[in-house]
Length: 229
Image (tube, rainbow, N blue to C red):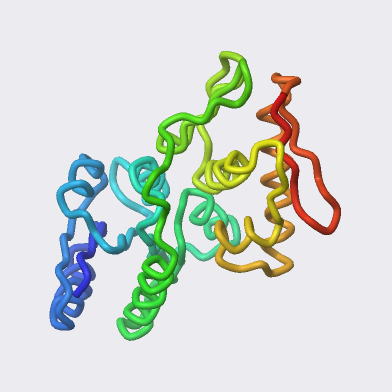
């Protein structure tokens, strides 16, 4: 039995989905919008979140970003009629793990739920995550807030940006393998995700450029060396 947080404003569809999930023994908390989502999430403590994207007052991407600020691990599935490449990219950037196009089959939804929860439980998050990681004298990283403070400048990070910096900061002045980052952040080291990683590393370097004591050096064929002087 899973505890499911389900955000969907189409009442008729939500009733069908929630009742189907409940018939299979799951506990469903359905809400129509993203207001007070942090409090609701903390009340429910769900095993998985299912989010519509087009919602009143706050879209699914914004809800996912809020959830990721308090929980890095819980699986998130987006359900949407939108299926352009940019929609998928935006979904994954905001912290989503999967994306299903409406209309969808309940059988497929439940298979995907099982798969994501299995992966999460097989690779639990580390129990102790520092509230703040000091990066030399002038910069700090706040994993739980997905926030980078670089020489007084605050940079709000996406879920994947924060995850990459968190991995690099665990081996300051040491090497982090490229494959490790791909598997932990994307669960897949495919060519497509590898190119995505290149883009994220460039963005992170641009965030760090104001602090000359911080550098991410590419180790060809290996990964990255995060230098903190």
